[in-house]
Length: 325
Ligand SMILES: NC(=O)c1ccc[n+]([C@@H]2O[C@H](COP(=O)([O-])OP(=O)(O)OC[C@H]3O[C@@H](n4cnc5c(N)ncnc54)[C@H](OP(=O)(O)O)[C@@H]3O)[C@@H](O)[C@H]2O)c1
Image 1 (cartoon, protein in one colour):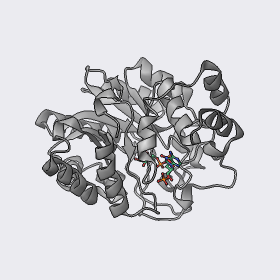
Image 2 (cartoon, rainbow, N blue to C red):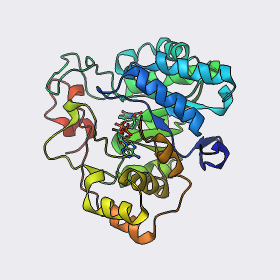
Image 3 (cartoon, protein in one colour):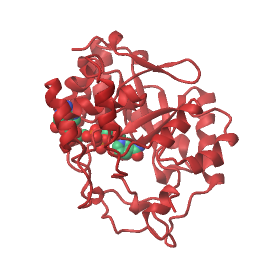
């Protein structure tokens, strides 16, 4: 058990605090809702106070039972938790409905940070394969995005949402929308791990007072099949991370978490077996400057979530999704 009061925090643009590490809850296509909910219960007891949920993970009702049990047992009060969830792509025109469903499923009364999961409304069926395309998919639209965002701003006005998050953005898209938002985004969730560091994006976010949250911080070795390509690098199996982990007497996952924190982004590792150790990583000894430099050199553009299933018919390939020439 880690004392939650000892877990460092990041400060959001308005002065609110957020724990420096959270628990991911995407069971991929491999871990059942019940197992994820059990990890959430265990996570609360272990000292986690930040949980990264999403409507499309299909497990918010079970996770809500874990929250309710913890509230009923007096393990934690609602205002001690920081609960994040996301509006899925098929609900961009019905954000209030999506938010209220998440609040009801998660049994949490309000959402601490509500994200737009992807910056376009392109929908794909759950568990679809990598080549499936929805003929209704469209390229990014500033007007559609800002309309979705404004719906969340209204939920902030109503008191149902505390902070607004964005996710899977690029600098190009941020440049196009940031000036059009009444309430600034507090955080941006992006894929960030040692072999895919997104330095330019992180610098841009920090310069705009938007906290970078790193998803797949360990390189997601058990991500869905559709996101696994033969050339993908497995972060935790690189010789450098294995050596640094050996030197510290820990698993490479712990080194990935320490690296993220020392870089100034908030990691949200998923785990049903090792979550206690992951939280402790935020409190134990730091990596040296030399170790940080060795990990910095692992950057190799190893994007794991290419997002092919969100492509619109006339797109050439997944690079279009990320505004890459
Ligand atoms: N915004 C978005 O579009 C988006 C996209 C993807 C993910 N996410 C969020 O980011 C979270 C994290 O990403 P992810 O779940 O794909 O991948 P991840 O956190 O990079 O990796 C999770 C995997 O690492 C293993 N692991 C965790 N801690 C470990 C440890 N200390 N030692 C050994 N193995 C360890 C887990 O296995 P065990 O369970 O056996 O420990 C699990 O298989 C998601 O759960 C989700 O909340 C957001």
